[in-house]
Amino acid sequence: MEASGKIVSGAVVSAPAPQHFDDPAGDIFAMAAQAGRAFMAGDRPIVAKAPHLLEDLFGGGLPEAGHGAQVTLQRLIEAGEAGALPSGRPEFFGYVVGGAHPVGVAADWLVSAWDQCAAVNDISPVAVAAEQTCQRWLVDLLGLPPQTVMGLTSGCTTANLACLAAARHAQLRRFGWDVNSQGVAGAPPLRVLVGDSTHVSVWRCLRLLGLADQVTVVRADGQGRMDPGHLAELASAGTGGLIVCGQVGSTDCGSVDPLAELARITHEFGGWLHLDGAYGLWAASSPQLRPLLAGVELADSWSCDAHKWLNTPYDCGLAFCADETALRGALAIDAGYLDTPERKGRDPLDFRVEMSQRARAPMLWAVLHHLGRAGVAALVERGCQAARHLARRLDGQDGIRLLTPVVLNQVLIHVGDLRHTRQVVEELNGSGTCWTTPTTWQGIPAIRMSVSNWRTDVGVMDRVAGQILDTHALVGAAGPPTP
Image (cartoon, rainbow, N blue to C red; front, side, top):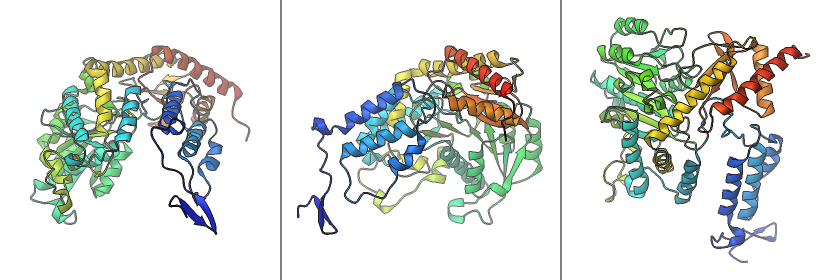
């Protein structure tokens, strides 16, 4: 029997032959590039074409002998055609999902070919060098304190986790407690104050850090912004360490907490201010929008996602911390097998939760290098302009009401009761012309639209406004669905 075969029930089954990169007939990379370009360039509806086919395309038992690389890749391409949602279209407003910039996609493909493990300097100098440059560029671009360090994470949840771990480490250290060696049982008390509209990822991180039972919610105003007066009242009411979690761009309406006031109150009581800036922190890159974030530089840590408003491909989260000692103290690790002669300088694994991860930094570097300072600002400003334009087109039309002012790139509208709202969303999304999500804002049913795509502009919003108004009218004329 040949080495490339396998005996199955008495029969010899040939295993797939090794892939030769110089074989034109077997150029799976060209296949992937062609399919990827077609998907990104296609003016296709924003709906999965045939998700019911996915079970057959992906399912069945694990192949006994495997298939040729072209056969496998073709099956994957067919699955993508059937079930991939074209969320990169400029009319996609669901959640806060950016549309990957082409230069980021190209860099991402190259990074996959390099197959770098961006954990320590000695096994991926290219990843570490790119990450250090991105840290320097972004700290400057966002106007953060010059000593700020950055960790690349899978997303804002793990960025929040890294920053809040640093906050816990630093606050307990003030009282002589080493959480790394002593744990949290019996530790000095910590008070965690969060806003009424704090994102669920922050709550998840506080739970993972054993702080869920030490959280108090601070009142918010009509736009979801934390009330400084109530924050000061709560901060002064207890003793022990203090962690305050603020927001730069709320999930539903894009509001920004009064950051300078939050920083002043937090630091008056010796606390740590963490800001969840998943998408909103990018507004700091714009001289036009920067005043909305006054005081953002006064915080101690910040979380952000590049795959949101910067439009890098998924996934690329950012954890920023002004206290390198606290971040390293919470996250840094060491082991005998890591102590190689080639290790020198900064190791990325000391600034994030993950150890082994792909080299995200070259992809981030490519988008920043391509856009430059002016390009990032223009991208963010264009999204805000488009959001304001859509709000003006819809507010007051046929009973539609804007629930909160458009601060950044989030548009929150009331179109009717819960049934009507959900039906409008279902009709819009089912048509494939645009994609939105329902929500509830202070007890009122609403449709939330997040303008995060680099291709979305005022012209796109004129079309979208017409589609929303038409759908709203059709749903209203049809009346309640038949039970």
